Image 1: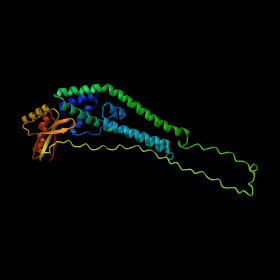
Image 2: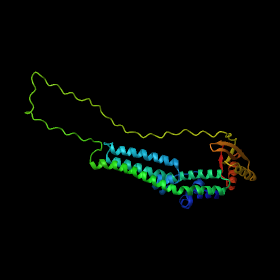
Image 3: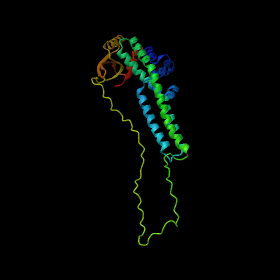
Image 4: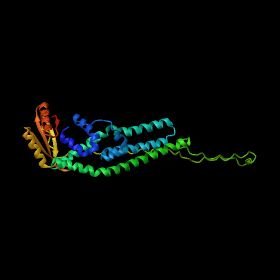
Length: 317
């Protein structure tokens, strides 16, 4: 991992977070992608851990899974009379294990992607590298105390939700019968035959009409599935990629930073391309190196770019 990238991650993680997660980030950067690794902190902390690190997309997905699972388990224990208790226990344990395993396996990868975006944004908006580090440290320190409070509130909410499901589970088991079984009305004692006078011969007994009863069918209410949002439109103003192989260096919001990067690349003897890009945050400048006729030339140029302390990603025609 380049020293500059490591310094940005340390500023965003803090001392304790750097000791816990920076070794994983080093492996991710060496491989060029994030992957699944087991983190007991993410598995046990779950929603609170995601909130603390401000991984809001993962928080929304995990909270939706918790609400949907709690509704399904509540219906399973309160309404599904024909399902054996052993099957209910197995399904409950499976859901709880899945809910803990998702952040436990992918939490560090989500954290790596989130901090990488924050570091990139800080570098683009800052005038100097030192200013970017200070901005990351201020942002993380300002949120840390509030994040602990919000994480505690989320933990309490999850505990209350688990308590509701637990009560729904205990009710049918303690009663020893299905929870939805309605009490049967007591039948009046049968009158003796001697007490009932025989019907008159001139008035035949008419059959008693049965009341019109409509069967009541209970339908479990399905939790609404989260509709996928519309795909974000591509930023206007991007020029078509030039023919041949090349190296993406980065996008810069400050024109001065873009000019300094172009100058460093030109001093290293690399062909530099710059493109103006319009985005929601305003105009940006994209810097690339190339084009090259062969992929080996692009790979060699990427090594030179990384030696300058910059990011480099090779693209094909």
